[in-house]
Length: 302
Image (cartoon, rainbow, N blue to C red):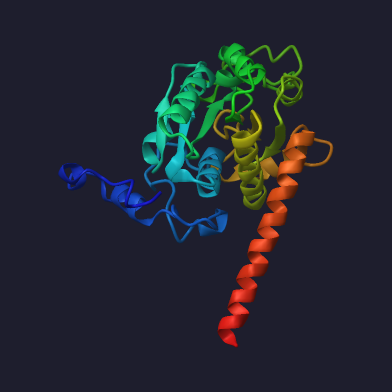
C-alpha cells in the first residue's frame, strides 16, 4: 500500500485506534519483493482482531495479505462468516457482500475496475468460508468460473459453519459430528477442487496454511494467472479449533496431521497448459531480474 495513495483522512486521524494508524504506516506495501518473511517486522493485521485465540484463519490472513503482488491495487470481496469480522482490521480495500453472492459481486467489481482504470492492473480476490463458497453461493461461484472471470477465489475451509454454532456444510467430512449436526454427516465431502478444474479454473490448489512459504507461492501464482488468463481457486484448510474440540494451541498440528500424503488436505495442484506457459515465462523473467541485480551489485563493488 503506497502511503501516497492510501492515507487516513486528516480529520479522522486522531480518533483512529493507534493499532490502525500503525497498520497504515508500517505495512509492507510498495515493496515488490514483499512476502511472508516480512511478517513480524511489518503489520498486515491489527493485534486486536476479532478471531479466536489460536485460530488458523489469523495465520492465513497474515500470509495472504503479505503475499499479494499489488495490495494497493487489490480489492478483496468477503462474505458473511468469521472472515467478515476480520476485514475491518486489515489495511486493504475490501467489500462485504451478502452471504453467498461474493463471486457475483467480484464479477461486477472486476469489470468496473477494468473500465475505470484502463491499462492499469487491478486485482480482485474473493475470500469466503465453505458455507458461502460451496453451499449458499455455489451457483454464483460456478457461474463466475464458467464465464472465465479473471479473479481468484479463496475458500477458507472450516469443514463446518464455524461462525454460527457448528452446523454441517457440504465440505464437512463424512461421519463428523458437530454441536449442531448431532447425527453426523451422511455423505462425502464435496470435491470442490475437482469441480473447479472441470468448471474452467486454470489454477487449483488444495492445501492447509501450515507452511507460509507455500501459501506465498500459491497466492502469487493464483493472482498472476487470474490477471492474464482466467479464474483460479484455492481451497485452504483453516480448522475451527473451537468447534472440532481442540485446544487453542492445537491448530497448527491439526493442519499438519490433515496434510499428510494419505489425508484429505495433502497438497494437490492443477495448472492448465496456458497457466504453465505463463508461470514458465514469469520464472524466466524473475531469474533474469535476479541475475541483473547481481551484476549491478558486482559492478558497484568493483
